[in-house]
Length: 150
Image (cartoon, rainbow, N blue to C red; front, side, top):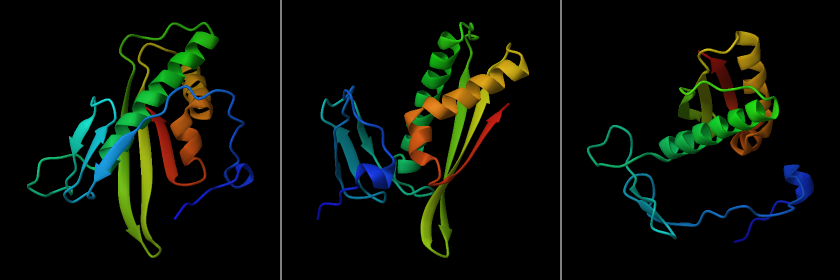
């Protein structure tokens, strides 16, 4: 089955150029599965949180990808505004797998550290990053997200 969302349904931007395509193959699911990227740089086993099996959860991978992308978006916003970022910018991402009346759903928190910047400057950079980060755009209006300066 092929599910296709039109531009109008997803409110996507017009694609001018594809910068990167990540390709993975996954066998199994979160209980006993594994994923490997086409270039072999990612080779990971999955496990259910709390199980004895060694492996990561899909939520951990999503949190890692989102926090890395958000840090890059902060750097882009700072460069655009000609603001020098501190060397120790860090983001702790928390992605929850929840169960509700309608089934499973995600929620997330990004805790951003921009030590050494005025609070108002740091807030402006985080606000701008939230507008340009592709993961933030993808989740906007789809899951509950809290972004906090710590």
